[in-house]
Image 1 (spheres, helix red, strand yellow):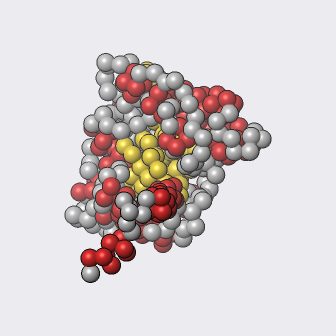
Image 2 (cartoon, one colour):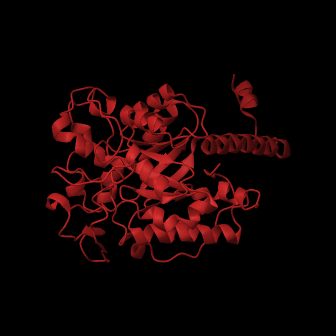
Image 3 (cartoon, helix red, strand yellow):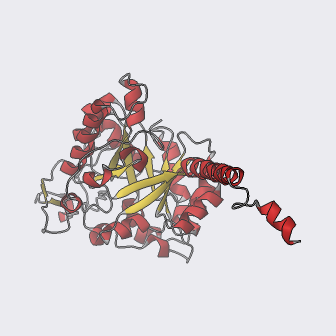
Length: 380
């Protein structure tokens, strides 16, 4: 289990937040959609392959430069098409919530707020209750992290949670149970803003995940104009499907030693929006029995953060309960603030503690602290 709420936080001195945020202006992901004839080998068209990547060179922007973190500079790019990871106007100039009808599907809140230089805050959902998602939206959260790995959800329950998020203007990111491309497709077809994939260990796996979230010919995701994500056939598929494709948020969890060993190569994969660090599974694999405050965990965490920064993708905070005091220094702009179970448990405990404190005060000073029942009896 890598979603950690209520455990010992990792402490880190940190540095100026603005220095980190200024070099991470990432709003979405880059997906190549060739529009001319390009010679590709069978290997190029394998799962997860992005044939335009290999013949690009990329340069990293610095604070105060263009808002694009990565720029294609190769003159050999097919069709002369150039895209950057950080340029939202080029990557996602279509408001998906306005495609087709007035139905609000995938509000695009994460992308919009990141473009405006804001952080986005989410809540992790493990209880299959649409009402909890709606309450989260009413509280002001930007996204719901729907945990279909550890939560006991059917696909129809995931769909209902996505609908609830849409209804209150929240984005929905589904943590899928595994790397199954069929489940990834069904979640995205239902209208999720993105996916979060557990146990990402290699760059090859990362490419396969990106391919599963990307329509052909760049990926392997099946296309259908009647899906909910396309507003049930009211979507202008020919005009807008590429915007739908590029808008998908693709996140991976680094929570194994193999994943940490390969994190630099993983972070460099085209189409990946960001990475999270899963300390609990990693700590279990390292024989630390869930102690996520260990210095060894801190070192692995810092390597993941550094890899994200170097590749210009988002480092996503999985839980401030664990990274409290450290997450601002990482430059993280997608922050999971709390989980439904943590919030409920904390509220239940606080309610019980308050009731016990009131009862104790009444016992110690019955004259000064009359019970509500006694007060009612006296006045009637």
